[in-house]
Image 1 (cartoon, rainbow, N blue to C red):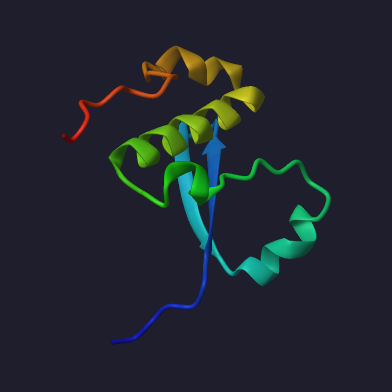
Image 2 (cartoon, helix red, strand yellow):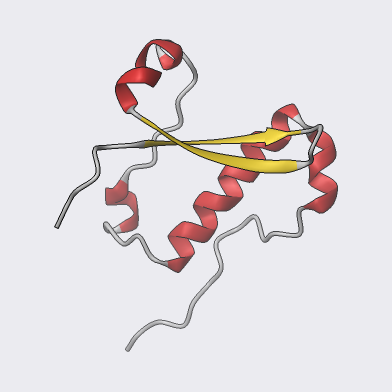
Length: 91
């Protein structure tokens, strides 16, 4: 089975077309651009290494909030729950 090379994901908002664009980029090509930029680390250990539906939901909300910092008008379209959603325990 072929394995793709490592990729970084870039999410951007195009205000003119009012769409979100997702691009896959080689990490080495981003390194110089990202050097010294504000970084928010997401430690997998904090999530018990579970990349589940709730993790994906929270990551998506964080990405939308990050875009809304530069494009505040996009908040009018956001109807997401900001806080973690409690799930019944598996007992």
